[in-house]
Image (tube, rainbow, N blue to C red; front, side):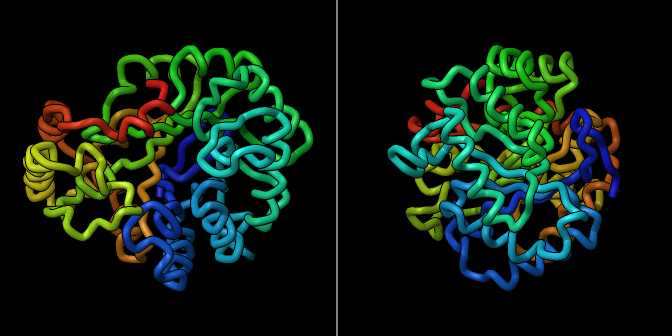
Amino acid sequence: MKYIKLRELSVSRIGLGAMGMSHGYTDSGTDEAESVRTLHRAVELGVTLIDTAEIYGPYVNEELLGRALKGHRDQVVLATKFGLVSHAGEGPWHLDSSPTNIRTAVEGSLKRLGTDYIDLYYQHRVDPDTPIEETAGAVGELIAEGKVRAFGLSEAGPETIRRAHAVQPVTAVQSEYSLWTRDLEKRVLPVLRELNIGLVPFAPLGHGFLTGRIRSTDGFEEGDFRHGNPRFTGENFRRNLALADEVQAVAADAGATPAQVALAWLLAQGDDIAPIPGTKRVHRVEENTAADALTLAAEQLDKLSSLPPAAGETHTEAGRRMLER
């Protein structure tokens, strides 16, 4: 496994998103033992960047990581997020990045993760009711106290990134980025590179679509992120199958799986990018991490880069209101 720097933070080139082990998908939370084995196998393979959030569950995903990574804390870079749980107000799925709420959130995350520090602490979504300068300052205080090592933002736009960075240096921005979600390339990525901020793409496999294994949405339960998602419905779904087929064709040519090809394309976009494909199965983490050793030919990269945009929005209308791209 190769390693890169997200600003000052050294991480594995490919990380692991733990959300789906507990939250967001049809079979999330159904096999904790396999999730634990997956986390342990990831560490064995050299994966250090492991990502969670207090909202995943809520809380249960952090608790799972706390149990699974006991005895492995010094081998991993733990990233978690605040701001989608209003602890003194309306509860989960309500934006609150006020300094008081951050103080409450960090103590809960530290306890659940079984650690006395968080390596990378992200604001999960920008809170329009709290100036980003106040949020950045609050995280800066936690860094000074040793409870947090680095500050991150998620799905933040260029102006928010600049304003936050002026108060407390931002180590990484986590945003959706993949072959079928490339919105940030024009507006956000140039700012990150100007300011020496790393990029952590989530959903680098398009919530499973780019693996080529999703050919129907019939099995998605109502709580599944993809149930009702514009890209997974109606004509959009049918059009996006053709995109997945194109990735499959490149994979066949490269002697790799579609997931590995999608990840290798992302890695080829720069040495300041560390995607966090999510999985809860050992064989999938083995497949994903093997992409670190895959080098695509120039013509293969060109073919992938020239694919048309995916049909449909990445989120429902409610989800899009929380994005800055």
